[in-house]
Image 1 (spheres, rainbow, N blue to C red):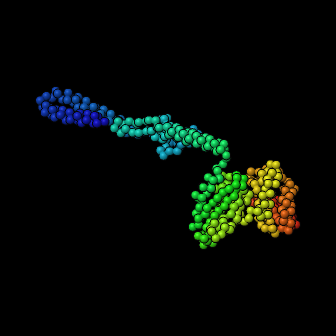
Image 2 (image 1 turned 120 degrees about the horizontal axis):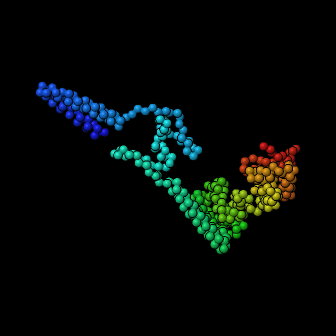
Image 3 (image 1 turned 120 degrees about the vertical axis):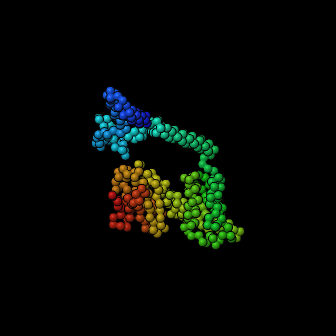
Amino acid sequence: MINNIDLKGNIGCNIIDMMNIFWEDYVMSKGKIKYIVFLIIIAVTLLSLVSVSYAWQGKRTVEAWYGDIKIVCNGQQIYYDTEPFIVDGTTYVPLRMMSGIFNKDVSWDATNYTIMIDDKPNSVEGMLRAQIFQQNYYIATLEERIREMERELDEGGELDLEDLEDELNDEFEDYRDIEFEISLSGDEDDISVKIDVDMDEYDDEWDDLSTRNKESYLQDICDEILDEYPRADISGYIRDSSRSSTKKLLEFHTNSRGDVVIGDDDSDLAELEDELNDDYEDYFDDLEILFIELDGDEDDITFTVFIEYDDYEDEWDDLSDREIENFMDDIYDDIEDEFEDADIIGYIYDTDNERNLARFDPDRSTEFRRYVD
């Protein structure tokens, strides 16, 4: 473009020089006029050619057709800021947009007026490699853990009670400004928990504890034990370990759900609850009973049978009203045999949707009711 402009300037200068020569020599020789005119015609023609060449390398006006052109790649429509168009039957699409579709990098070399197109690093491949590495590491970790568990089983099973005792003391030794000492005994099925506290030193702090505080503290301890021994029956007590006394401050045990109950584990109601869970665990062939819970005292007792309805919806729906009523009536009779003067009412409870599925109450005119959605 620069060369074209210089050429045009040089031709202009030559024309001026020729005009000066023409006027100087005009009077000398009229015969040369025709020759000079011929040169001028040639110069004007060259100027016209230069102008045409210069315009061809610059801007051009074209007629483009826009028709809401859509681009779909692998069934997915691509949205863009610059709309494609058609010129003389050729569709023009933004290069940068298409490079993104085909995973290419595009750059512009302003010095050489060159578009550079290169392959992008394969990010998908790198991501997949990272995922495979992570999964292989996770598998190796699981395999090592399995080998450790196999060694533990060969050596005697779950975490040793002494090790668990050390862990409990590390975590629960201090609670609300009181220092406790925890001791465990028993086996994987029955675990006894003894907790000592020096009342000569912590009498005031102990009195400041509410029943809820005590239940919460004991529940945390029992949850840790059940993590290692899920089927264990836990019972225990907190004892005054001071020199002046060795009395029990409270006794506790866990029910069939693993919840802490403060009170003597040898109570008749707690024993009956365990018996009912053993007797009725497999009452129905296809319907699993989570557990049976007894609440109340020797005068008023409520029994609740817990099931997971979402897991056994078809099995529950297949049971007739008579089958469910007989089941609840059997539980009622077992409770009445132990507490013949108690007012007894029973429920079947859906833990998934938190609702009662059935009620059994002989004191009502309709002693059995099955709740239907």
